[in-house]
Image (cartoon, rainbow, N blue to C red; front, side, top):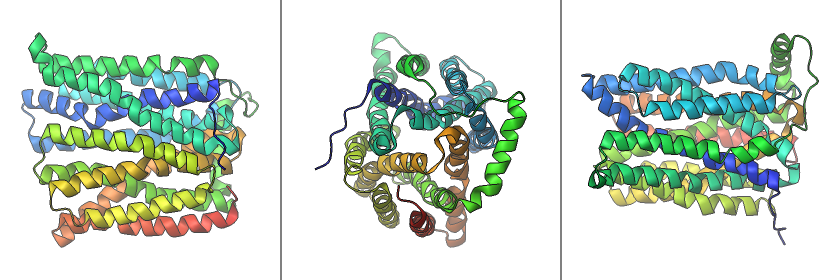
Length: 414
């Protein structure tokens, strides 16, 4: 029988941060682009330039976090530094999120968006690294799964409130732009409020003793880790595998919206489809967390990769709105499982006192690799003149990721 895990007070506090930051994630995928489109149109920016500028901003965030994440992560491994650096990163994201709703300049909006997204993304590095401090290795899979699961459902609360303001605010005299501004503030308030328990209860248990020249020492330690990474076969192969399959996961999520647009779904339909994915992901991720008590994470991750390979092949055949909704459900079934189990699996195969450093590298292989799948889809689409072939090409990433993951599992019992 699988032992039922009751979360400790600290584990619950850690899970709550997923609930808080996920509200920002959902806004980025939904209302942020709509709001930016509105102020860009007011400034006479064409739709082509709008998409390009939005893409440039997202790329700048990826580059900044990819370059700074490992160094900051290494720095947070020193005793007493993880929580304050995490707090500053989170606060930058929260303040930036609130401010975005009051900006009318498209250029200033993008600048603040980059700052806010950098704060958000950096906070996740340190948050993931906290997993080694808040729970024990045998509980990591389920605790990590509960974080993602409650994050999916929790993010819907401020989102639905904000969406209702946007759709029905006019009935009580609130304009659409004002409603969107309020939605940003509500998400930011939700984010910081549910983070308070973690800030009050978290204590860094695993750490490296601080040295006089901490920043210089951080660079030296990071360089040493990267140099010796190939010798640690389980970590090295897993990161290569994660680089491939998680990029395929993120690309499918992004391309689903593009497919919906091509199929003629309106904005409301796309938002509802995204909500459906979140709602399905909640119980599905909890189920994967429960299964991790009976089956090894390496088997469950393998199942998720295979499932995404099948999802990709199904996406290749998309030609109706019904199939689009089926795709949304399927993505929700495995999205949280592969993300949460990958996080906990990695946490179990790294030195706990160097969690910040290693999760900084982990973040590069996750968010930093996001260009690969979109580039593959774009290139294949242009070469074949078919969007379906473009999305179908992602199968290659999942196959490579699966093979590398199986090889990494030969070196670990996690």
